[in-house]
Length: 399
Image 1 (spheres, rainbow, N blue to C red):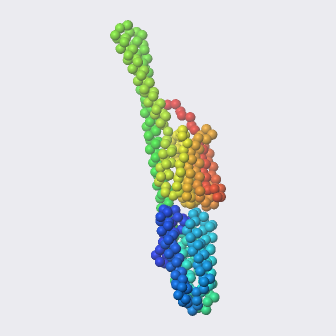
Image 2 (cartoon, rainbow, N blue to C red):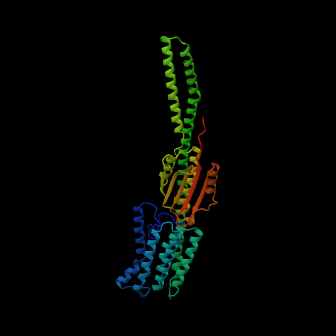
Image 3 (cartoon, helix red, strand yellow):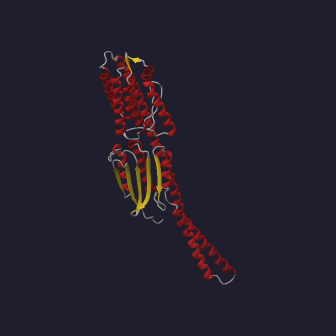
């Protein structure tokens, strides 16, 4: 699994980026810094080639610049990769091969310093145990490449280069854990914010429902009774000024009853959860991936349905961040087959997503099925991760 733009302190104190997920400006700056580091490591050889000097008693052959350039190209390729773990490791293998070729052409222990750049990239892309295994493997490979020289100065390689690689590996792992903690906190924060919107909507809708029932059951009943009494009074009151007042009062009672019914009808129509607003809050609070919300007009859901769909969307966001490393996530809500449908689709690496038996997906399925709906999860390679949830529309119950 690859991560976003990562600051890496090289032996020169320069930052080295992996696949960029931060701003373009920062990505450009770190790419430039990485190129400076690469040139700085190769500068002693370049300088001796220009001046005609020698390294370890031998001239610098022009052939050395071929693997040197290949290393730089592979390094740039690794920096531009986004969530393509298999391609990243291919780029690291190319870089290691280039370093070995440089060491064979120019048997100088200074070539091993390029391994520190590779060690950092490996540490940011995998677990500590695998990163340490990679460091041990590439150190053994450079020792084998340098062993052809009569005096390869292997103590420099083992004592300094290997120690620096270990330092960078542990530093990278610390940054990776910090980034994962930040990701987890971001996911928790967006879940709390979305839940807050749902709770606020639920409280508001419950109050609206209470008021509408109170108006309908208490005021509506009393006004209806008042209208009936005025109807009777209009029939038993003799013609005259008194009857005119009774008829006027009857009309006022009827008009007031009509207004109460209009208010009840308006409150009932507003008795729904603002699912779109909750999804937009979720999208606004998550910087990566970019979340695109689309909700068809006229789609209405109850608070419990909205809560279930929000949880499905949150799980899709969490999966896109922690597992798929997606750049974009699309949330689409539509009316479908007499119900409401939520489709969450990302453009990440489907081969690295959490299995369908994970606790998050199991919880999603339980929430949806509890409301009479169904849930489908697809992890098509090359097409991202998709969560498809459907809930039936419930017929409103009379107050």
